[in-house]
Amino acid sequence: MADSAPNILLIMADQLAPQFTGAYGHHVVKTPHMDALVACGVRFDNAYCNSPLCAPSRFSFMSGQLVTRIAAYDNAAEFPASVPTFAHYLKMMGYRTCLSGKMHFVGPDQLHGFEERVTTDIYPADYAWTPDWELADERIDKWYHNMDSVREAGVAATTFQIDYDEETAFFAKRKIFDYARERSGPFCLVASFIHPHDPYVARRDWWDLYDSNAVDLPKTALGHNEQDPFSRRLMDGIEASTIEVSEEQVRNARHAYYANTSYFDSKVGELVAAVEEASLLDETIIIVTADHGDMLGERGLWYKMNFFEHSARVPLIMAGPGIENRQVTNVCSLVDILPTLIDIADVERNAKPKLGQPIDGRSLWPLASGGSDDVDEAIGEYCAEMTAEPVFMIRRGKYKYIRCDSDPAILFDLEADPDELTNLASDPDHAEVSAAFAAEVATRWDSTKIRGDVIRTQKQRRAIHAAMEAGPLVSWDYNPPRDAAREYVRNHMDWTEVAAKTRFPPLKQ
Image (tube, rainbow, N blue to C red; front, side, top):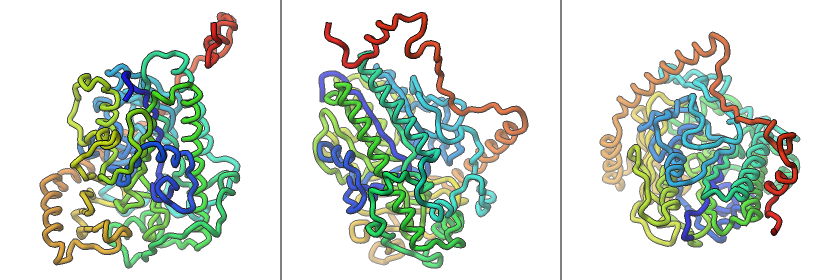
């Protein structure tokens, strides 16, 4: 580690399963820029999200807390302004903090510790997307996933997602050079992209990276009657149980997803190149991750919202000063990012800020820097659509245990059964393991209480949203402040001074 606190560039994808990246060994998908980071940094091979849905996952990631601790239940759950985030703590440690791109903050606070946001968000900041656990089987067609993304997969010149990611990358690169010109202390820049999230539509140049015949089909296909009860509800919710898709449509969806993964990877390359051109590479730690994965047809499921490996696992790659080149097999999760960033910033090892709330994660810095860690677990909670009861996951060592009060328990041995085809929860040879996990779930969570709280907050949010829709629009959506009269060259400025100030590297005097 350098003597001074390093800069942090954290790059986040949306819905990127590590299994579908070259960086994690996929034989088709091209991710050369992530590969390059793996070649000089650390790759965490068993990293998980803490909730397989965008907003809850991101709120856990930002706060280091599980979703039931902060009531971050679904994509319309408010992220309270009173919850400290890693952006708050890094500011306390002298960091400049900036967000470019998506974080799916819900509520009137759209900063959550970032001193600056340079883009708006891509999804609404209000309570419109609130599920109803008292009508759990009712689809909300306006915003629920369905199979259209699979059936309509293909090529387009542009989409709202491409527009957004181009803007995210542009402002992130410009901010990197702003920091290089200002030299005003270490920075933490989060650049968060929407790809490869569905709809599965790619630009022709990325689509043409792949031969359709080389795009692999799902390894495991399960019909509706072969699924566990929760997976059947998922199939019903996304209409996969009633709308058939052809092999060609499945292949097209995966083709576009692979193309958009390469597109995201190109943005990783652009940002790393900007850091290098700004002469900051040797003093910047680069982290690449995602909020959750995508089933992409595996097990007959699509998108996320479950704790199977393709949905719940995320990529986690770190490179930069002080980081060893290694692969780490310890199980970890996104709540571990906050304490890890604090450790990265705490160069002197005695300047950590006092935590405003307890956190659920542990620092991954010892593992990233070549040390060891006895902890080998991740905890997951899901409290959103397609269920009427909370769903819990414990991944510890080789075992994964999934429990929902309305469904039979699920236990997998991921070393012996990486495709998760054999449920060992009722297997006599695993009775002791299963009973221990069941007891732990009962001790760790009060499912009945959580369900009551979820329904209570859903009713609150639906009432407030109805009121917001009844009168003139008052939006919480973030509008980045911008004063064109102070940008580039204006009459109150000396253009030669502006030219000198904005040029990088500066002219030698």
